[in-house]
Image 1: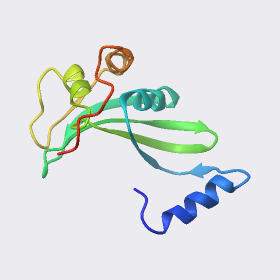
Image 2: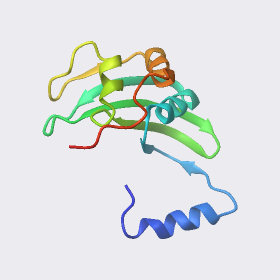
Image 3: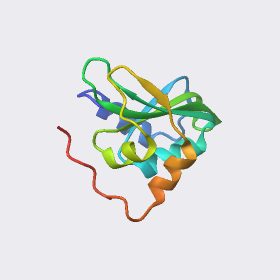
Image 4: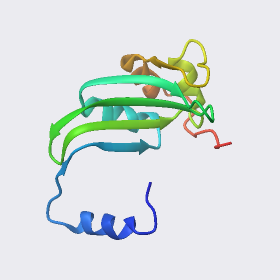
Length: 126
C-alpha cells in the first residue's frame, strides 16, 4: 500500500534509468485478468484461496519465483475475493470458513477471467 512517503519513492523509481528488485515482492491487483497475467510470469506458480481468521475477508493468492528483470525473487500476488465474488464462487466449490485455505486451479481461474459473460465491475467493498 502506498502511504504518504511512498509517492516520492515511486516517482523516483519510475524516473530512474533502470530498476531491479532483488527480494520478495507482494502485489495487490485490481482484477482477475491482472492476477492471471502475473501468474503467467511466475515460475512454478502455486495458487490458493483463503479467508482471514479475524475478519473473514476472502482472498485469492498466487506465489512463485521470478528470475527475469526487473524482479528477482519470490512474488506474491493477491486479489480481493470479496470484491470479485463471482470469480471466488467460480473457482471455489464451497465457501471457506474463516482461517481456512484451499488450493485453486490456475487453469480454471484463467477460463473464468477470460469469460465475456462474467461481471466486468467489481462488487463494492463492504
